[in-house]
Amino acid sequence: MSRAAVPGLPSRYPIGEQLPALYADDDFAQRFTAGLDTVLAPVFATLDNLPAYLDPRLTPTDFLAWLASWVGVEDDPRWPVELRREAVVRAVELHRWRGTRRGLTEALHLALGVHAEVTGDGGATWSSTAGAGLPPEPDAEILVRVWPAREARVDAVRLREIVRAMCPVHTAFRVEVLPAPPADEGR
Image (tube, rainbow, N blue to C red):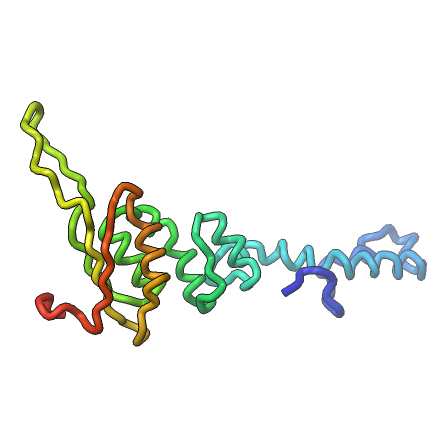
């Protein structure tokens, strides 16, 4: 989509009509300002619709990547447009949960349409008692088990990329792709 000169787009504010009365019948002045109206009409149309450009649900598709960069979302052109819009809409929420089980499962569901189960804590332990002994060494690996929801096949490479991006840098992880929900979960 182009917001350059759009043939036939009328200006809501024609310059010729705003000139002093002396130029109202001047053919050259009216033609000259009509040329300017052609150039300025898309600018006025864009400014009049600026709130729609800043709403990810309404913005033109070519502005979506720019809007995604404002909220720190990777805009993947391989995704359908509606999924890209949803990623921008939910960006703040997903950033809030980044590095947590919930954040990882939400990101995987949004990006790949899979259900996920995350076990393990990635090696983080703490104690609320001052001066207490150190807690036992935790399992330093997390396990991410996924199964398809909206698509029959799970892209394992993309899955690992998303898990790596969403996990804290110090954590090791293992990914398992299951054909259906785990039996013990009763889902």
